[in-house]
Image (cartoon, rainbow, N blue to C red; front, side, top):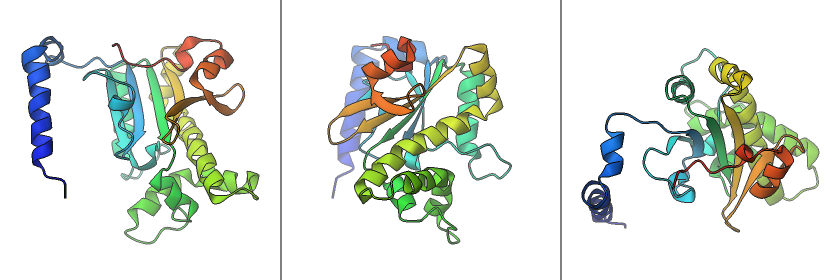
Length: 229
């Protein structure tokens, strides 16, 4: 069993670095945050956005949930915590971009492919949440009837990112700012096995290595890292 003292020691190192050795950053941040990017990531402990992107505190405003999903805007209370975070980032923090960051080996997508998103049972919170991505599962089953389970899961992991991007575009605040040209939306996919990062290119409707996605989009903002290091 991992001892809690490890985390206490980690906080001590954090405190020494940011409050004793290099206090300037938190001196600037204590009066408010000005992140350039909202990143919607997965709860998976292996995929920490700040570590993956080598960010300092204050660089990214992060919303993490099971399978990095964006729910469609609707009246029930269930997904409103996610939608509230998006609205706050877009309307109050005025972030310049939103990145939906998915990854391989996602447990939420595995549950979805096993049918957990179809008519979930009472108190099956995972199934109810993953129902958001049910259209991705249906698309994969239709388009890849002969594929292996692993290939289908990977395809669904990427298709669910597209579903989240589509749901983002349905939010009034997001729609307004994208039409103004002051906000851009991006779908990224991290491969745990290879350590590679790909980006969704609407132009070719596929996930490409980030450098290729830049070329396909014709502008560097399609896959520019949000950190300022």
